[in-house]
Structures are given as C-alpha cells and as structure tokens.
Image (cartoon, rainbow, N blue to C red; front, side, top):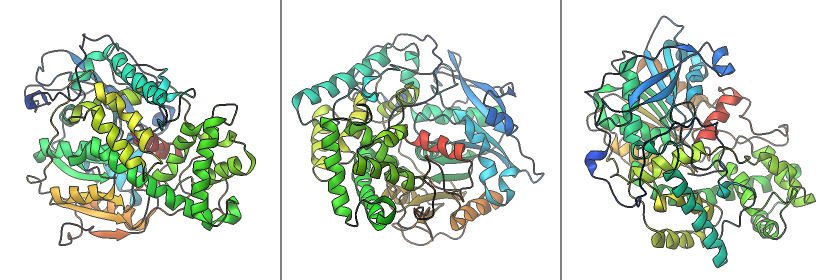
Length: 541
C-alpha cells in the first residue's frame, strides 16, 4: 500500500535505545501484544480539540494513557490522542470507534463520521476517533527522516533499468531504516504491531466504560478490526469493514496483489478517457492512450516538466489516484491531457503531494515490517521483475516504497491467524469488484473466515473504501445495520458476495466542472473528511 509521503507534524519524545535487527527474523509468538487484564485504563480528561473542524462538530479531545508494552503494564506509558462527538439522539446505541486506514493514518477526524450515516442513525452513537500509537498527536510520534530522499523530487526513475538506479534505491531505503533505529521515538518500534493497536482499542473501550466495542474501519482499519475481533471476540458489537484486507496476505503478498490490480485499473481509466474524447482530446483508442502514457514516462525521465519537478515517478504517483478512486477522474484527466497536448505539467504537479513530514510513512513501516515476516532482497527483486514485465504501472514504485522492511530495525512477529469462530454477532463488509488497494478476493477470504459476516459488492467498481459516497443500496444497508444490529440473511456458498450494489459512479466529464480532488456531489461525507480517508489509505499504497 503506497503513495507519496505527506502527513501531519510529528511530536518526538526520547525513547530507549533499539539495536538494528533483521526484519525477517521472527520474534517469538509470545512477544505479540497479549490481553491486558492486568492494566486498568483511566478515562481521558476531555477538553477542547485543536482542530477547528472538530470544534465546529462539538467534539472533545483528550489523551488515553496505555502501556508501551502490554506484557509489562506497570512499565513505561505512552499517550493515544482521542476525539469524540457524543450522541444527540435519546435512542442511544453505544460507542463506535472509527479508523481511516493506513497504517499510519491520523484518525482524530473520524469522530465526525456519524453525520455521514443516513437517516440520522449516526446521532445515536458516541463517535470516537484516535491517532494510533506513534501517529500524529499521539506521543511519542514517530519520525525517522522528514527529508527522506525517496519522497522528494530529485530521485531517479522507480524502474531500475541501470545498475546505479538499483544501487541508489537500495541505499536510500536502507538508510531510512537506519534512521528509524536512531529516531527519538525508537523505543516504539518493538511495540507497533496491529496486536498492540488492537489492545489500545480495547483500553479505550474499557476507559469509557463500554461493554462492547462498535467499530467502523476502512482499508487497513479492516485488518485492525479482524485482529481485534480475533483477540477480543466477546467484546465485538456492530462492526463495519470497508475495503477488506486479506489477513493471510498481510503484508508482502498484499502488495504484490496491488501491483497487478492497479495496473488493470489504469486500463479501466484509459478506457474512460477514450470514451470521453470530446472532454479530454486524447483519442478514442484506449490502447493508444496507454502507449502514450508510457512514452510520457520515458520523455519525463529525459526532461522533467513543470520546472524540472515532474518526472516519471511524480507522474506515476499522481496517476495512482485514478486506480484508487473515481472521485477526481475528470480533474486528473484534464491535467493529464494538458501535459500530453501542450507539454504543460503544472496542473499535474499541483496534484502531487508535496514531500513533507514522514510520520505516516514511518508508522506504515513500523507496523507493516513487524506484523509478519518479510522476505529478503533476492525474492523481492525477482517478484518485482516478474510482475513488472506484465504489470509495470506500480510494481517498482511499490517495491521501493516497502523496501525499508528489508532491513527494518525491529523484529517481525508471526502473523495473526484471524478467525470469527467465536463471534456470533453479524459483521458488515463492503468492497468493490476491482478495488486495487485491497483486492476483492481478500473480502471473499475474510467472508469465509468470519462466518457471521455479510458482504456487499459494488459490482465492477474500482473505488477503494467508498462507502457513504451516496450509493443508497450500500449506505442504507449500513444505516439499517447500525440502527438495528441486523443484516439480511447470508447467501450460501463461500466464493460470492451477499448483496450486489452499484459502485461509486464515475463522474461525467461533459457535465462536471474541472476541480481539484474532491468527492462526488452526492457524497455523504464532507470533502475534508473524505480527503482524510484518502490520505490515510494512501499512506500505505
């Protein structure tokens, strides 16, 4: 899971020394975060939020104190930044916690999600958001190199066609791992697994006095939900998972799956551009548009556009959004057409995420590199070349994005074997057929693992984690489930969805106004909240 590096400013706190260790060396299973019966969390002291949008929503914010290591509950503590918007409907349903994905995404804004639930159902819950350990306003906040060269403008092509390019990326990504070993917050690195975050979730549940946890997770947040449900099955209330990750593939294989599906989704986007030639003037032959894209990459490799800042890597990073979501297909198409037809790449460069603080990228690696064993360079390189030959759009960029895991300075643990065997309450899952970030086969596999789950399929859609975008078939089912706790009867069979809905619709360029990234006009979420989700989900490609 990958994109360019941008996230909020870090808060660094000095931690203990951590010696570098190969990420491929698995830690004993008993080092994973266990239950925390010996730790009793206290409720945060609630006060005014710093965010004006949270203030406008009537939110309160505070810090939840939890153990750095749940195996040593009396030891060092860290603070988890938490937000909440309390219920306003007397038909109170309980607390519900949201996670936007990542890993590494800030989630304080998720306290505002209730307003997007149809029919006023969201007002029946206390909505909680949080910055997971190491993220954003939580302390300590992890940062390794805010000026990481792999996220800047002055970098070589992702595709290592020359030995010096391969050497540059190997050296640069390895140096990032070494920088993390020297981070002021390095003491976090052995305690950043999803099991640790799940334990923090349960500490929040305890701290506010809730018997059950209700939960709405997007993207990586679905995996966090699966781990929580496996570790704390008797605490599971109403769970919604949108953009479902296959836990068996976390995370190396999941990234290989992305390399294939993102390439396919770009073909779908090229077909969209060809269909709307009157709007984009790129021609009616989608294969010719595709060939033209790869010519542009070669051209930009020789002579970057937009003042020397738009090279092949930057163009690929911008075009990646077309594989994630349909929301800005018009604006992106107009900017790309301008580059092709006039040589002006300024609009595309404006869409490129300016390199900034690396907090999201640091946490992404800290979680992904330690949740499960990571293969060595020999296999990584072979897989990258093998997939690149047929699916070149994302493969090498994604490979380098995840390459810090090759020598991450904390041991990897054994993957959690998720299971819904002890869960009797229904779980609602949502995914689109051609979701590239969390491929739909993962939703089907998770449906098999959780026998009480019910899967909505956005048929033939390409949008990742697009619930509450105004598709009534999907959104009304979510609202009814959160209101009653009930879902329609599950369909027989393992390799199928239970309910078929329309996908998030692609915009019609002939009637849409050119605009910067934004949700569809019928999106139930405010534009800034949708942007929070997409930022979090592309923290990890």
